[in-house]
Amino acid sequence: MKLILASQSLTRRRMLESAGVIFEAATALVDERREKEALQGDGLAAHAIAKSLAEMKALSLSEKGALVIGCDQTLEYGDGFMLDKPHSEHDAFDQLKALSGRSHFLHSAIAIAENGKIAWRQVDSARLTMRELSDRFIKNYLELEYEQIRHCVGGYQIEGRGAQLFDWIEGSHFAIQGLPLLPLLKYLRERGILLT
Image (cartoon, rainbow, N blue to C red; front, top):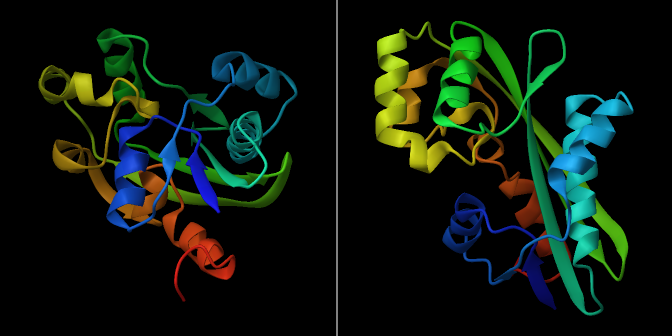
């Protein structure tokens, strides 16, 4: 059965490739910003928004004879506040400043659509505690990393220099990168797409 990843995320593609999963990547047919605003307006929690968006992305490309993987990730901090992908380097600075010295949650959702229906879904959450960051450190980090992190919720990646941002992490490294990989691999084995 054909497997389609409804995402052009380089990180997610590399994760699947590294795990030996054969798939095609395509762009989901979802206006993510508009849909997210609507879900927030409905009062959904951050993890539920991630799940809903993952389902929408999977369904947007659902076709007969294929399993379509949709993914989304939300960042929640404080009393239910959410951060999106930064719009500029200045925005990324403000986001990192807001997260400095605090804990936040990343909610990574995955959904699989088959024949126009959701066949499977999973949400994994991780708690990350960022160390106190100086303005100088944040500016230097963004000078070196902005092109790599500008499409990342919260304005950072855990990989590479991003590891220097944190004091403590609880949860799956895969969830932090935006794809609950181990539950997905288990599901694909159960479906006979991967060898058991």
